[in-house]
Length: 78
Image 1: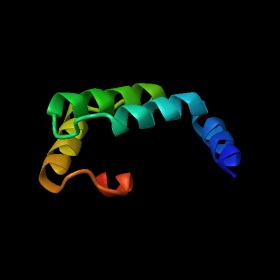
Image 2 (image 1 turned 45 degrees about the horizontal axis):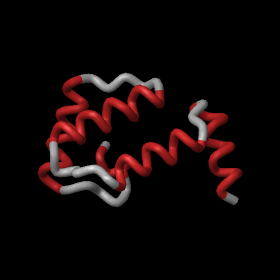
Image 3 (image 1 turned 120 degrees about the vertical axis):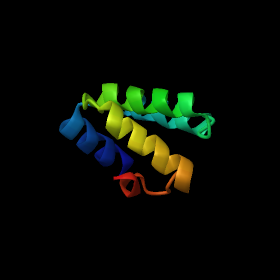
């Protein structure tokens, strides 16, 4: 089942499963209350996904996390 999920992600975004695990590990061990850490994480994910994030959008994500905490569903950030 997971293999199919990773294959689908790879097809749609060209991101391999090792990169996904690396991101997950960095989030798991990150101090998400530190703004610098959050900004680096946003930029890293943006770079890996090849989806640029504007400064304004980055700021809005940071402000939302500061106000409400890290959502369990990342779609709640948007």
